Length: 94
Image 1 (cartoon, one colour):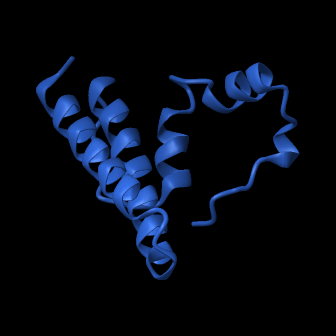
Image 2: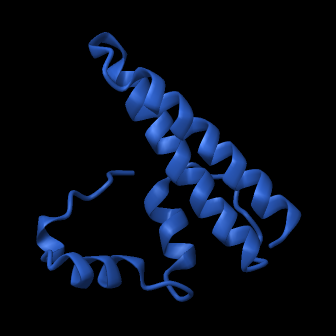
C-alpha cells in the first residue's frame, strides 16, 4: 500500500472515530453528517491514490466515485450481496 494511501485512510478513520463519539448527541447531527462525508471523501481519495490516479482538488462524492467507476464495481457488488435494488439506495447529491 502506498504511503499517501495510508495517510488518507488514517484521516478517514479519524473521522469515523469522531462520529463514534458524537453520534448519539442529538444537537451534533450536523457534525455527524459532516464527518461522514469527510470519511467517504478521504476513502475515495485513498483508492484514487492507490490506483495512481491524480487526485483532483474536489469534494463532490459523486465525481470522486465516477473517477473510480472503471476500477471498481462497488455499487453493483454491494447491492447484489445485500439483495437491494439500486433504486432503494439514497443518492448523494453534489
